[in-house]
Image 1 (cartoon, rainbow, N blue to C red):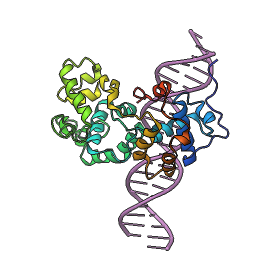
Image 2 (cartoon, protein in one colour):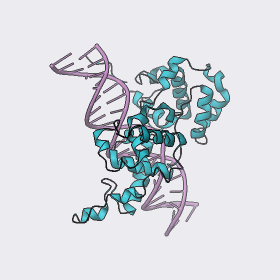
Image 3 (cartoon, rainbow, N blue to C red):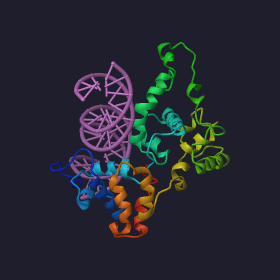
Image 4 (spheres, rainbow, N blue to C red):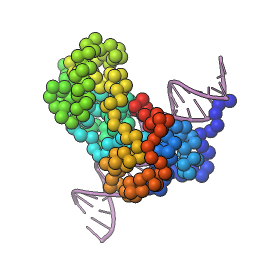
Length: 264
DNA sequence: AACTGGTGCAACCGCTGCATG
DNA sequence: ACATGCAGCGGTTGCACCAGT
């Protein structure tokens, strides 16, 4: 029958993570890699549920995370992706390197939703609000896309490599063969190479759009930008360097578990 | 200075699909 | 084939912080 239970519910700590717990989790994952969350709390010496550890790592401790508010371009990308994918936050997050589903979901609920309502757009259907009050009104699907990411225009906040790949993608895949039927049926995907590329599987498969640190030094450098200011232990960690972790560069096995390009 | 309401975000809860025995 | 566990996902909650009164 089945497997062993994930974790016993007794003695499992809940609530905000302490710096000490963060340190233990990061140390464990950098040493052993990201696998089998069920065993992580036990092996890392944490009184947490594996689920909680996974969440903490993916939403907060992961070194490739960007911190801070989404910029204007990211916000518009989220709106466009939401119009196409709905509330599938993980799918949306997969198309925004360095952003988590939780972060995007929160940003959507606290910022974008209100903005759209203010603009007279239903955040669920992406249709004008008055259209719903008056079904007779003429359709106005372009209202959102008037300000969408324009491949030839406002793309200064999108990483250069993504734009470059979008350009080559649009020239090499004129038949949109890598786009799912649902996505390719979208009336807007044809005329926006950047969106077509981002929605395509090629985007997710192309690891060059991600910049994941592979050493502890790089983790510290990389992580500093995201955790600086709100995780005092991280300063300490940076100072301790390899002495603290007792390791230098990762071996191949470590690298393989750190490759999360297919996870989000 | 104290209170109140709004806001933002981290973390939890519960469900689902897939894997496992 | 079936029961069960796990990982992942989306919805929701709780709390800290801040601005306004």
